Length: 560
Image (cartoon, rainbow, N blue to C red; front, top):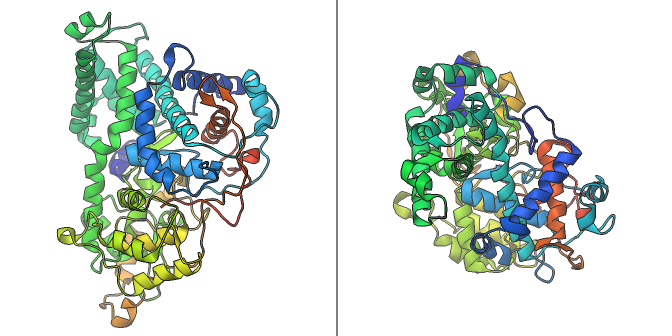
């Protein structure tokens, strides 16, 4: 996130962390490691041996995704792979604002053969039964299993970094630490976690902790956050006392397993803690949005960056490649789209090898209310106008409902006309309509693959991700000073496009499921694909799912 810019410029450039599911810090990801870790994750998540998932946890996941699931078009209650990705992506964004690498909605899917069956046969031969046995449909149970397994993989993946931090402090997994020792070590973990592979910067900060207070954003609060997570663990242990933990609890002693549990909680809860920064940034952008269009002129954006807040300093080309710029209006000029900017990779505070922690997508709560009210994949215009007309947005004044009469309702009717009189909830056109109803909360949905919205971090873009002072001044100096006239006011929807993208057609036949313990076979398959995406084994540009689904290039998934 650009909150780290001052630190980055002072010390060195931030880099991403190491590969997903690596065996140790000196061992690269290989096929054997991938297969072993996936099998381990399956055992831990879905019922083999002593590491079976807590049934209550599975119930909680199901309760979150069920309203969404009811509104997804399905075949006999089952979804295809593309839709499963969409559900899983939204689950993690709703719960923790985690963007799981490999589930990015902007990724283009196709039917390219990527050899999935061969990989599955090589690494999971005793659990597959035959080459090419790829499933095409997923039940609600499968979705819960898939999400639970991903959740476990995210948790387990933190072990590598925690191990590294322990070793750098001369400790191992067998050490039992006092409260102050554990707190200090976890503070070091936070620095490593947020700084990625900037080894030089990490070493400088940890050797001179005065710099943490002066250069690391909100370091005092971060220390309190770590302390709070430790105390939360203590409280949980006291409430559910297990045999052998009484002495450790009384003496405030912590094992490596305790530390691992704490860092897992940090990952899941960090966005909630950091959201105040996102709110501050949004408030500043909203103050610049004089007309309520959810857009800020690039000249005003840079003007604020020069005069008040160093947050707003991404280069024009970086903003363009992130899909943040609206350049559709010759009258208004280049504009920064507020919700797209807030959701862009440049504003994700943590960029780990297998996930990013980003600002909350405020449109998710409104979409959730719509899904609960509708309960079906499609809805009539009249019902939708009534539901949306009673919603309120975080940036509305005195909780005033949105204006859904006039031209905006006509646009909704045009969407319905293209779909036999009803509106599909999970399509690009409805997401686009929601953006214009809630322009400061709902991102503008670009066509799939048009931009690297979710993956193009500052490090990935390169050193020119920051605009120079002269570039910012040039935009400010050349900006039109005249007030926007009435003709310009008619262009508030100039970026609207008629291209629809639905998440899937579900005409395929439901196939029988192969299971390993209580784990659906297709979940193992999907996790292999996801893990390979996350590691780059398949390459960032190759997002095909091979035999997993018959995906059409004319109907592509997209986030709301």
